[in-house]
Length: 334
Image 1 (cartoon, rainbow, N blue to C red):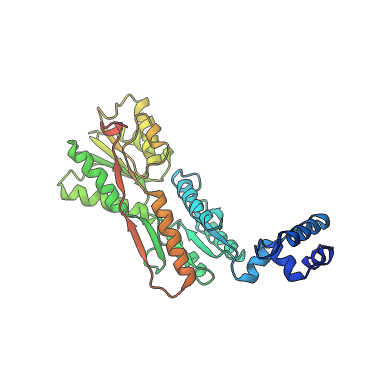
Image 2: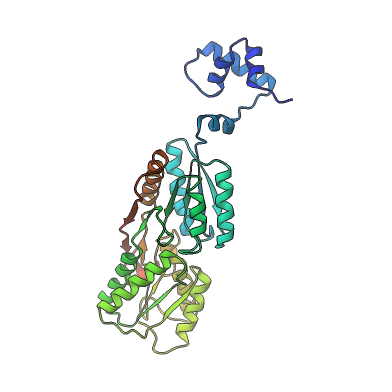
């Protein structure tokens, strides 16, 4: 039979209320009584059920988070920043990987809600197909979207201005003399892919640059960067610059260019997006658009906490300005 708090109280010779205060960390108990209760608990093998206690208070001090693909180096950086923010207020994070599958994403959201998380942070897999997950999730727990969002759905969101970010990269290579600029990114399933593509097209059009340069859309993975590089190497004319939808694509592309003896930045300029940890370790170090992870995490937790207090608040959308980090892949220095 499981040892109860009543058993501990009887062994220590105190009231159940006093035993409860000691075992839940209350400071309103004398050191002598606290020692008696703790000694009794150890002797009986009592284990405090923190989850049950939290549920009685209406809070579990846990937050769920779902990312599309934990293998993408950008998402762990955001997860780490969010977890650090939660730890400051004594909360824990439950992390789930949707594996780029909206069905798995929906199952993960249900599982986290079943565990009575106080709120849910989600990076949606799809701008459209993840809508059903959000519709269901917001009925059960406060929800904040981060980085990506579901189109035309009224849920809080925080992320960088993706369109502006890619615009910064295009403006940078144009200022260095590039005219034929290729774009390599992911298919337009997610809001981030859509906005980055829109940013590229906007700046190219404004500068009157050639419109027949490659627009190669695949995935946000290094393997796709290598494949896209091979496609460009097989076609003429070769671009002056390649703007990539994320750093992982750019790193794959750099590797294939190096194997093909295409010099970066002498023969072609290359930029990325995200400023993951490996960007400055690339060969050559990668010029990229930096997402301010700590600021994103802080705003995300702020929105979630506000939504937990008042579920009827107006929906908030916070777009943070990214910045350009210039390194050797466009002729700068690290």
